[in-house]
Length: 151
Image 1: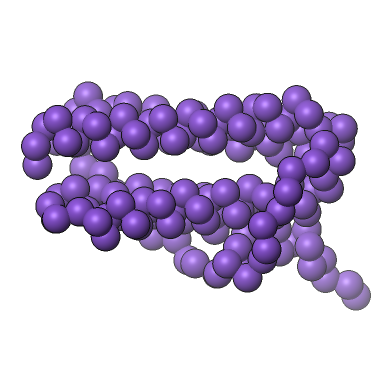
Image 2: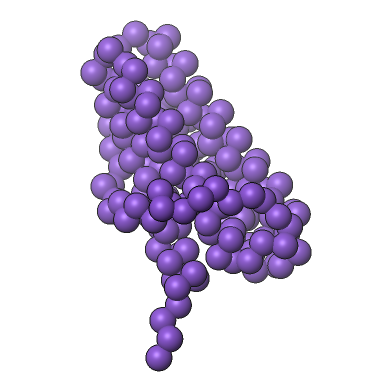
């Protein structure tokens, strides 16, 4: 893979993680419910960890990029877009976050599909897997918040 193409690809992924982190930090500051604010703060920290992982990859291109395969429940795909509101409930905040992760994974998959270079495509697919893992965790939390068991 061309080193310049690789570097540009990783820089774009880092920029996306920074934008997601900044959104979650901004959202946390807007929230009226401190519990929901904490969810957004936690998500911002996770996006920052993704950024750090990508920076490690950028400076060590020979590092293996493989993320654990997560189940895909497809919950996010069944839900409509959620507009942001400072009055969001926990369920709504999780809804918004899982949709954002779904979109991030879809973006990386689209990039992989547009690549002619198999190495570059594989890296994009691994980045999509990283986002899918995050989406999976958010889907589990969302389902528990949106559909609690009643006895």
